[in-house]
Length: 297
Image (cartoon, rainbow, N blue to C red; front, side):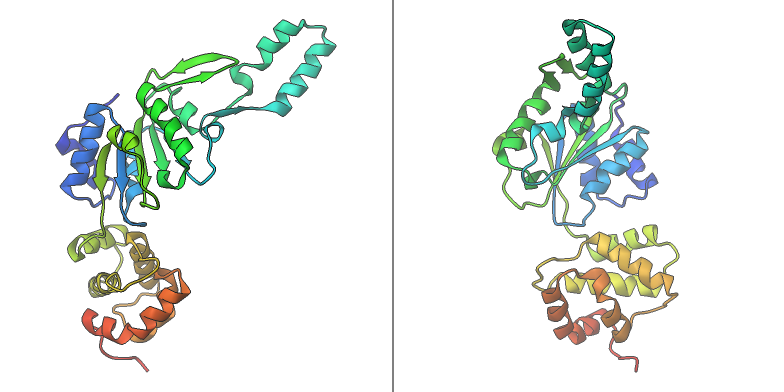
Protein backbone atom coordinates (compact mmCIF):
# COMPACT_ATOMS: atom_id res chain seq x y z
CA UNK A 1 0.00 0.00 0.00
CA UNK A 2 1.49 3.31 -1.09
CA UNK A 3 1.74 5.83 1.75
CA UNK A 4 2.07 9.52 0.92
CA UNK A 5 3.56 12.13 3.26
CA UNK A 6 1.44 15.08 4.42
CA UNK A 7 3.02 17.51 1.95
CA UNK A 8 2.65 14.93 -0.83
CA UNK A 9 -1.01 14.50 0.08
CA UNK A 10 -1.60 18.26 -0.08
CA UNK A 11 0.18 18.45 -3.43
CA UNK A 12 -1.79 15.47 -4.68
CA UNK A 13 -5.11 17.20 -3.95
CA UNK A 14 -3.89 20.42 -5.54
CA UNK A 15 -2.53 18.68 -8.65
CA UNK A 16 -5.91 17.02 -9.23
CA UNK A 17 -7.72 20.35 -8.94
CA UNK A 18 -9.20 19.70 -5.49
CA UNK A 19 -9.20 22.91 -3.45
CA UNK A 20 -9.21 21.73 0.14
CA UNK A 21 -8.20 22.87 3.61
CA UNK A 22 -5.17 21.45 5.40
CA UNK A 23 -7.60 19.44 7.57
CA UNK A 24 -8.67 17.45 4.50
CA UNK A 25 -5.08 16.66 3.53
CA UNK A 26 -4.29 15.72 7.14
CA UNK A 27 -7.31 13.39 7.38
CA UNK A 28 -6.38 11.62 4.14
CA UNK A 29 -2.74 11.36 5.19
CA UNK A 30 -3.64 9.82 8.56
CA UNK A 31 -6.19 7.45 7.01
CA UNK A 32 -3.49 6.10 4.68
CA UNK A 33 -0.81 6.09 7.39
CA UNK A 34 -2.99 4.22 9.91
CA UNK A 35 -4.78 2.14 7.26
CA UNK A 36 -8.15 3.15 8.66
CA UNK A 37 -11.39 4.09 6.88
CA UNK A 38 -12.17 7.80 6.63
CA UNK A 39 -15.74 8.87 7.36
CA UNK A 40 -16.51 12.19 5.63
CA UNK A 41 -19.71 14.00 6.57
CA UNK A 42 -21.16 17.33 5.54
CA UNK A 43 -23.96 18.93 3.52
CA UNK A 44 -24.73 17.62 0.04
CA UNK A 45 -22.56 18.94 -2.75
CA UNK A 46 -19.50 20.07 -0.78
CA UNK A 47 -17.00 17.64 -2.37
CA UNK A 48 -17.14 14.54 -0.16
CA UNK A 49 -17.38 12.01 -2.99
CA UNK A 50 -14.78 13.94 -4.99
CA UNK A 51 -12.15 13.11 -2.35
CA UNK A 52 -12.34 9.41 -3.24
CA UNK A 53 -12.20 10.15 -6.98
CA UNK A 54 -9.17 12.39 -6.57
CA UNK A 55 -7.41 9.84 -4.36
CA UNK A 56 -7.95 7.01 -6.86
CA UNK A 57 -6.73 9.15 -9.75
CA UNK A 58 -3.67 10.41 -7.90
CA UNK A 59 -2.66 6.89 -6.79
CA UNK A 60 -3.40 5.49 -10.25
CA UNK A 61 -5.63 2.80 -8.80
CA UNK A 62 -9.20 1.62 -9.25
CA UNK A 63 -12.16 3.42 -7.71
CA UNK A 64 -14.86 0.99 -6.59
CA UNK A 65 -18.08 2.71 -5.57
CA UNK A 66 -20.97 1.30 -3.59
CA UNK A 67 -23.94 3.67 -3.62
CA UNK A 68 -25.86 3.00 -0.41
CA UNK A 69 -29.64 3.06 -0.16
CA UNK A 70 -32.44 1.85 2.07
CA UNK A 71 -32.81 -1.91 1.75
CA UNK A 72 -29.21 -2.51 0.65
CA UNK A 73 -28.05 -5.93 1.86
CA UNK A 74 -24.79 -7.84 1.95
CA UNK A 75 -25.39 -9.64 -1.37
CA UNK A 76 -25.61 -6.29 -3.16
CA UNK A 77 -22.26 -5.33 -1.66
CA UNK A 78 -20.45 -8.68 -1.88
CA UNK A 79 -21.42 -11.07 -4.66
CA UNK A 80 -24.04 -13.16 -6.35
CA UNK A 81 -23.89 -16.21 -8.58
CA UNK A 82 -24.55 -15.97 -12.30
CA UNK A 83 -27.36 -18.50 -12.19
CA UNK A 84 -28.19 -18.43 -15.91
CA UNK A 85 -24.63 -19.26 -16.92
CA UNK A 86 -24.44 -21.92 -14.22
CA UNK A 87 -27.58 -23.64 -15.57
CA UNK A 88 -26.27 -23.57 -19.13
CA UNK A 89 -22.95 -25.02 -18.00
CA UNK A 90 -24.73 -27.73 -16.00
CA UNK A 91 -26.71 -28.83 -19.05
CA UNK A 92 -23.54 -29.04 -21.11
CA UNK A 93 -21.78 -31.13 -18.45
CA UNK A 94 -24.81 -33.42 -18.06
CA UNK A 95 -24.70 -34.12 -21.79
CA UNK A 96 -21.02 -35.00 -21.42
CA UNK A 97 -21.79 -37.41 -18.56
CA UNK A 98 -19.71 -35.58 -15.97
CA UNK A 99 -20.18 -36.71 -12.36
CA UNK A 100 -22.29 -34.64 -9.96
CA UNK A 101 -19.43 -33.77 -7.58
CA UNK A 102 -17.27 -32.53 -10.43
CA UNK A 103 -20.17 -30.47 -11.79
CA UNK A 104 -20.72 -28.84 -8.40
CA UNK A 105 -17.04 -27.91 -8.17
CA UNK A 106 -17.11 -26.47 -11.68
CA UNK A 107 -20.16 -24.24 -11.33
CA UNK A 108 -19.18 -22.80 -7.95
CA UNK A 109 -15.99 -21.14 -9.15
CA UNK A 110 -14.77 -17.62 -9.92
CA UNK A 111 -15.94 -18.05 -13.49
CA UNK A 112 -19.56 -17.77 -12.37
CA UNK A 113 -19.08 -15.35 -9.48
CA UNK A 114 -20.38 -11.81 -9.98
CA UNK A 115 -18.27 -9.67 -7.66
CA UNK A 116 -19.85 -6.59 -6.11
CA UNK A 117 -17.79 -3.60 -4.87
CA UNK A 118 -16.67 -4.91 -1.45
CA UNK A 119 -15.57 -8.35 -2.69
CA UNK A 120 -14.02 -6.70 -5.73
CA UNK A 121 -12.07 -4.38 -3.42
CA UNK A 122 -10.47 -7.16 -1.39
CA UNK A 123 -9.46 -9.27 -4.39
CA UNK A 124 -7.40 -6.64 -6.21
CA UNK A 125 -3.68 -7.00 -6.93
CA UNK A 126 -3.23 -3.35 -5.96
CA UNK A 127 -4.99 -1.44 -3.18
CA UNK A 128 -8.05 0.23 -4.72
CA UNK A 129 -10.10 3.10 -3.34
CA UNK A 130 -13.42 1.79 -1.99
CA UNK A 131 -16.09 4.49 -1.78
CA UNK A 132 -19.11 3.70 0.41
CA UNK A 133 -21.24 6.63 -0.66
CA UNK A 134 -24.08 8.00 1.52
CA UNK A 135 -23.67 5.17 4.02
CA UNK A 136 -26.26 6.82 6.28
CA UNK A 137 -28.97 5.93 3.74
CA UNK A 138 -28.45 2.21 4.34
CA UNK A 139 -30.21 0.31 7.12
CA UNK A 140 -28.65 -0.46 10.50
CA UNK A 141 -28.41 -4.13 9.50
CA UNK A 142 -26.09 -3.26 6.64
CA UNK A 143 -24.08 -1.03 8.96
CA UNK A 144 -23.57 -4.03 11.27
CA UNK A 145 -22.35 -6.09 8.31
CA UNK A 146 -19.83 -3.36 7.50
CA UNK A 147 -18.33 -3.58 10.99
CA UNK A 148 -17.02 -7.09 10.37
CA UNK A 149 -15.72 -6.31 6.91
CA UNK A 150 -13.91 -3.14 8.00
CA UNK A 151 -12.34 -4.99 10.93
CA UNK A 152 -11.16 -8.22 9.29
CA UNK A 153 -11.17 -7.50 5.55
CA UNK A 154 -12.28 -10.99 4.79
CA UNK A 155 -15.40 -12.43 3.22
CA UNK A 156 -16.71 -15.98 3.46
CA UNK A 157 -18.43 -17.47 0.43
CA UNK A 158 -20.03 -20.75 1.60
CA UNK A 159 -19.46 -22.57 -1.69
CA UNK A 160 -15.81 -21.50 -2.02
CA UNK A 161 -14.43 -20.52 1.39
CA UNK A 162 -12.95 -17.42 3.00
CA UNK A 163 -11.25 -14.73 0.95
CA UNK A 164 -8.91 -12.37 2.80
CA UNK A 165 -7.56 -9.13 1.38
CA UNK A 166 -3.87 -9.23 0.49
CA UNK A 167 -3.96 -5.50 -0.29
CA UNK A 168 -6.24 -3.50 1.98
CA UNK A 169 -8.29 -0.91 0.12
CA UNK A 170 -8.29 2.78 0.93
CA UNK A 171 -11.81 3.29 2.29
CA UNK A 172 -13.82 6.50 2.11
CA UNK A 173 -17.31 6.56 3.65
CA UNK A 174 -19.54 9.58 3.03
CA UNK A 175 -22.71 10.69 4.79
CA UNK A 176 -25.16 13.58 4.79
CA UNK A 177 -26.41 12.86 8.33
CA UNK A 178 -29.85 11.71 7.17
CA UNK A 179 -29.63 9.45 10.22
CA UNK A 180 -27.14 9.02 13.03
CA UNK A 181 -24.52 6.36 12.40
CA UNK A 182 -23.67 3.93 15.19
CA UNK A 183 -20.85 4.60 17.61
CA UNK A 184 -19.34 1.23 16.65
CA UNK A 185 -18.95 2.29 13.02
CA UNK A 186 -17.63 5.73 13.94
CA UNK A 187 -14.99 4.22 16.23
CA UNK A 188 -13.58 2.20 13.34
CA UNK A 189 -13.07 5.33 11.24
CA UNK A 190 -11.21 8.59 11.23
CA UNK A 191 -13.58 11.52 10.92
CA UNK A 192 -13.73 14.58 8.68
CA UNK A 193 -16.45 17.22 8.49
CA UNK A 194 -16.63 19.35 5.33
CA UNK A 195 -18.81 22.45 5.46
CA UNK A 196 -19.81 24.97 2.82
CA UNK A 197 -16.73 26.94 1.76
CA UNK A 198 -16.12 30.57 2.58
CA UNK A 199 -16.10 33.14 -0.23
CA UNK A 200 -12.37 32.96 -0.99
CA UNK A 201 -12.26 29.17 -1.08
CA UNK A 202 -15.34 28.91 -3.29
CA UNK A 203 -13.93 31.50 -5.66
CA UNK A 204 -10.70 29.50 -5.91
CA UNK A 205 -12.73 26.38 -6.72
CA UNK A 206 -14.69 28.23 -9.42
CA UNK A 207 -11.51 29.60 -10.98
CA UNK A 208 -9.97 26.11 -10.98
CA UNK A 209 -13.01 24.28 -12.37
CA UNK A 210 -14.15 27.05 -14.76
CA UNK A 211 -10.91 28.81 -15.79
CA UNK A 212 -12.60 30.64 -18.66
CA UNK A 213 -15.00 32.54 -16.37
CA UNK A 214 -14.80 36.33 -16.15
CA UNK A 215 -13.25 37.47 -12.86
CA UNK A 216 -16.11 39.80 -11.92
CA UNK A 217 -18.75 37.21 -12.79
CA UNK A 218 -16.99 34.59 -10.67
CA UNK A 219 -16.88 36.95 -7.71
CA UNK A 220 -20.58 37.82 -8.05
CA UNK A 221 -21.59 34.15 -8.33
CA UNK A 222 -19.70 33.21 -5.15
CA UNK A 223 -21.03 36.24 -3.29
CA UNK A 224 -24.60 35.41 -4.35
CA UNK A 225 -24.20 31.76 -3.28
CA UNK A 226 -22.87 32.84 0.11
CA UNK A 227 -25.97 34.99 0.71
CA UNK A 228 -28.32 32.36 -0.77
CA UNK A 229 -27.14 29.74 1.74
CA UNK A 230 -28.21 32.01 4.60
CA UNK A 231 -31.86 31.56 3.56
CA UNK A 232 -33.91 28.76 5.11
CA UNK A 233 -34.03 26.41 2.15
CA UNK A 234 -35.18 22.81 1.85
CA UNK A 235 -32.17 21.88 -0.28
CA UNK A 236 -29.29 24.29 0.21
CA UNK A 237 -27.10 24.34 -2.92
CA UNK A 238 -23.55 23.07 -2.60
CA UNK A 239 -20.30 23.68 -4.44
CA UNK A 240 -21.39 21.43 -7.30
CA UNK A 241 -24.32 23.76 -8.02
CA UNK A 242 -21.99 26.76 -7.90
CA UNK A 243 -19.72 25.11 -10.49
CA UNK A 244 -22.69 24.17 -12.70
CA UNK A 245 -23.98 27.75 -12.56
CA UNK A 246 -20.54 29.19 -13.29
CA UNK A 247 -20.13 26.90 -16.30
CA UNK A 248 -23.59 27.75 -17.59
CA UNK A 249 -23.06 31.51 -17.34
CA UNK A 250 -19.52 31.33 -18.70
CA UNK A 251 -20.80 29.36 -21.71
CA UNK A 252 -23.03 32.35 -22.49
CA UNK A 253 -19.96 34.62 -22.37
CA UNK A 254 -21.45 36.78 -19.63
CA UNK A 255 -19.28 39.29 -17.79
CA UNK A 256 -21.52 40.01 -14.80
CA UNK A 257 -24.82 39.09 -13.16
CA UNK A 258 -28.06 40.95 -13.59
CA UNK A 259 -31.50 40.30 -12.18
CA UNK A 260 -32.94 38.81 -15.34
CA UNK A 261 -30.18 36.26 -15.83
CA UNK A 262 -30.40 35.22 -12.19
CA UNK A 263 -34.17 34.72 -12.49
CA UNK A 264 -33.78 32.77 -15.74
CA UNK A 265 -31.08 30.43 -14.41
CA UNK A 266 -32.15 29.77 -10.82
CA UNK A 267 -33.08 26.23 -11.87
CA UNK A 268 -29.39 25.43 -12.22
CA UNK A 269 -28.83 26.24 -8.56
CA UNK A 270 -32.10 25.31 -6.84
CA UNK A 271 -33.89 21.96 -7.15
CA UNK A 272 -37.04 22.57 -5.09
CA UNK A 273 -40.04 24.70 -6.11
CA UNK A 274 -40.52 26.08 -2.60
CA UNK A 275 -36.88 27.14 -2.53
CA UNK A 276 -37.38 28.79 -5.93
CA UNK A 277 -40.34 30.79 -4.68
CA UNK A 278 -38.62 31.73 -1.42
CA UNK A 279 -35.52 32.89 -3.31
CA UNK A 280 -37.54 34.89 -5.83
CA UNK A 281 -39.28 36.69 -2.96
CA UNK A 282 -35.90 37.59 -1.47
CA UNK A 283 -34.10 38.16 -4.77
CA UNK A 284 -33.86 41.94 -4.65
CA UNK A 285 -32.22 41.83 -1.24
CA UNK A 286 -29.87 39.02 -2.29
CA UNK A 287 -28.78 40.91 -5.39
CA UNK A 288 -28.21 44.10 -3.44
CA UNK A 289 -25.93 42.25 -1.00
CA UNK A 290 -24.16 40.70 -3.98
CA UNK A 291 -23.59 44.10 -5.56
CA UNK A 292 -26.16 43.70 -8.34
CA UNK A 293 -28.67 46.51 -7.94
CA UNK A 294 -30.09 47.16 -11.39
CA UNK A 295 -32.57 45.20 -13.43
CA UNK A 296 -31.74 44.93 -17.12
CA UNK A 297 -34.93 45.78 -18.97
